Image 1 (cartoon, rainbow, N blue to C red):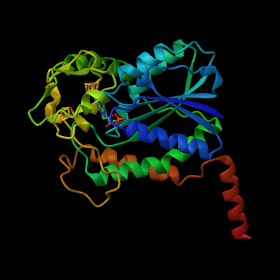
Image 2 (cartoon, rainbow, N blue to C red):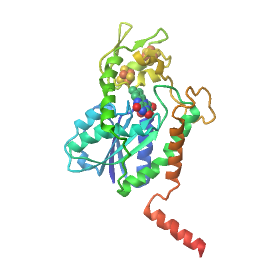
Image 3 (cartoon, rainbow, N blue to C red):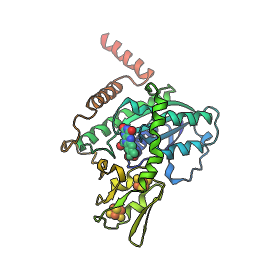
Image 4 (cartoon, rainbow, N blue to C red):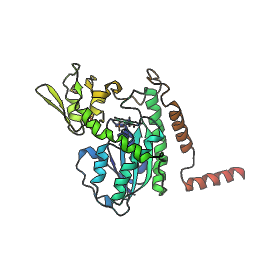
Length: 303
Ligand SMILES: Cc1cc2nc3c(=O)[nH]c(=O)nc-3n(C[C@H](O)[C@H](O)[C@H](O)COP(=O)(O)O)c2cc1C
Ligand code: SF4
Ligand code: SF4
């Protein structure tokens, strides 16, 4: 099966998930192709693929505007299957509404969103998770992805539950799309800056320019956090949200680091439930074939 996955990732979490999903698809004998939406050179014929995937980080209970714009520019379709992958910092059910607008745009174009998969990954804004939590989230995602991938390929539909009034709530929070642009113009660079140029080079919308030693932040900020998250000197102040800034890539391989969890009890029950649900999911037989095999094995044992 040929699968085209188009993604946007601000700080790498969604990219990790997409790569793992592609690896799982390959292991199942499919042919995945990955396209990075910010490259802005989309020249695939979507009709050549059996399934189209769209992946993004949840931003204020929505898909980032770059994802909606990408969907608006897709060619018309006659019912092509689409799956959605997303990552978010907390496992609240409210995050499931992030796909509503995207699904509507796709439906208008004739696409059919049949599967949605969500993975909890560490925050790149609000507060820093511990490396232990990042490790646990990533390990969980890696375990669940092959299961989700097999479900997708089996043809079974699987959509995430949406909360009551989800469409309206998501619409309210889409204020983040223009609010982000407004806030993005208020980014400042502190004296810690070593003028390495990294932020200028990595911004997905080329929104940062450096002229005569002065930084200029334009009006195309996606609030993706890439510049402030990856700045080696934590020198970028992110406007009104500076108290929520998270700086520095996570170490996903450090399970023994529990220090400095700022909000130990924040959404505690949701995280516990998320990990429980994932554990239950991977302990289930993944396909009817496997189920039959398991039943046969049980019969042999009984005999
Ligand atoms: C502007 C912004 C808004 C966010 N809003 C949410 C949110 O509504 N819910 C949530 O759980 N996480 C939220 N997050 C956290 C990200 O979804 C999460 O860290 C994600 O894994 C980042 O993926 P990326 O590294 O691919 O950009 C937000 C992050 C940013 C930068
Ligand atoms: S990445 Fe940080 S240190 Fe490097 S130029 Fe940008 S603000 Fe300065
Ligand atoms: S300015 Fe920073 S937060 Fe805004 S789009 Fe560029 S990298 Fe992302």
